[in-house]
Image 1 (cartoon, each protein chain N blue to C red):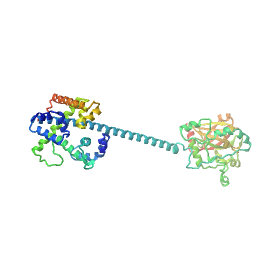
Image 2 (image 1 turned 60 degrees about the vertical axis):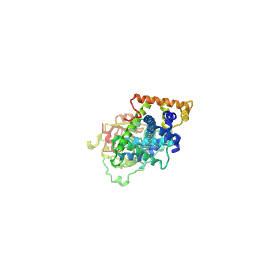
Image 3 (image 1 turned 135 degrees about the horizontal axis):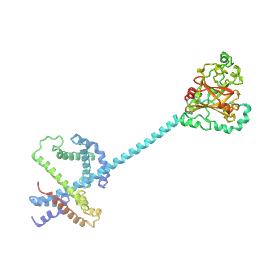
Image 4 (image 1 turned 90 degrees about the vertical axis):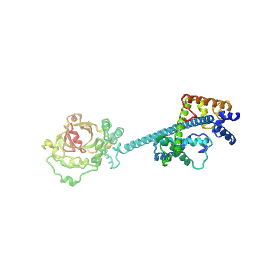
Length: 182
Length: 345
């Protein structure tokens, strides 16, 4: 299955979803979530696995189902904190100020990334596709040139720079300050 | 900080490589040292990190959307396949039901659970030539009883006659001498006897038509005595001497004129060969049951059309009737309920 992910077979996603649905849904439902939360956590967990494998950052030390369960637990923990302003699973409510700050930072970061994602939609293609291939799928510039039909890697580099600037412009126009504290 | 270090942090490509972990250890340490303590460069790095995180989030959302679409298509395909399977199963069940109905219920005119009486054939010796000449015609007329339904009644209205096998008319059924001798004789010379109905008569009843052998119990110009009547008793048709006596003084209540009976006649040559009787004192008769009346067709060459027009049909009870013609009276034993039908009008 890992080989299929590396080859870009997206049908693996649905298979991973179906085979891990029961265990992850049970985790979410037992910890304050509903069916919709469970569905979203499972999808995100599967995609995170896909991302890790595709970017070479996945090291299999256990079964895929075990890894997915751990990922799902973290994903739901973050969502739960943002959703309910509650600590993660069964942990005592003894968060220090630092911990609260990190939770807040996490919420802010999440909000920012949401806006950046929406700005990408407005950016449109080919910039959107190029940036996703480079920053999410971590493709090389040569690979991107082949995929998108650019002349060479240098063209991709130049195009990437231009697209990022355009994205930053959109974010600035939206009033989203980046790189600074609230 | 020298110009070369500033170039690194100002170079977005270096920043990208740093964030993708593509710098060597030496390059990474150098860039981090450049950033450390420099608020502007730290902010620039943070911006790059946020944008990268946002782009990755966008990529994940796109992939999740694709996954949801694939799952939805799978569910739709499963739903359709279940529907097709369910539809196929429903068709199979309907076909089985139709088959069961047609085999067990729709065709019970041909019952298999009780005896199928044989057709008794009495071919008169003097009519053999006639029988051969009309063999084809007879063959068409000999058919199995039709099922009891309005459609079957409509079919009976056609020219082709349905042949019902009636064991009561079986020539083999001959009353015992003891029975005959025990029966009281009357002034008219007739004797009474009864006949038990058989399962075959039930079959005929179901078909809507029945072949009977009518016994001529009285001829206007003569009376039939008991011995002669016994010779004509092959059909087992009951005949009450009292009722058939000419000018009988029997109570009117025992003789009920039936208006809902139509009497017809046909020549003997139109009879199916299997119905040809040797006994000159009997008349092969087809009794057909319609919605609210009976049709009694006499197959006899002595009965004239004029006689039929003047026919009076009387009932002697629940299952007996007499067709009284100007020249003769003929008695019949009908299946249960048929006489009642003749009274419906």
